[in-house]
Length: 78
Image (spheres, rainbow, N blue to C red):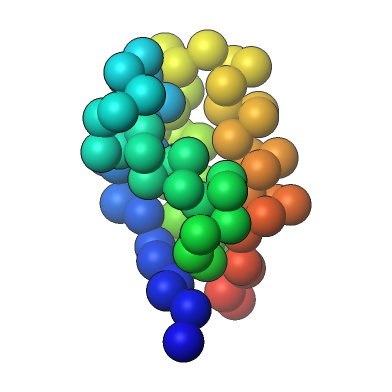
């Protein structure tokens, strides 16, 4: 059975902010993008990611790329 996860917003924030490619949070995002597990999201989690990333001044380009990746690669849960 394939591993399925829902990422806490703090993991996403730390993964996008930390330049260290070996950080656990950055590694989580990398493994997801490499299709090593299923990333689950809902409208509520997606909205929370966007709100927190914008609030913490994550560059808009990164926020947009992350949301595009979610829509293309993640599994939507209604």
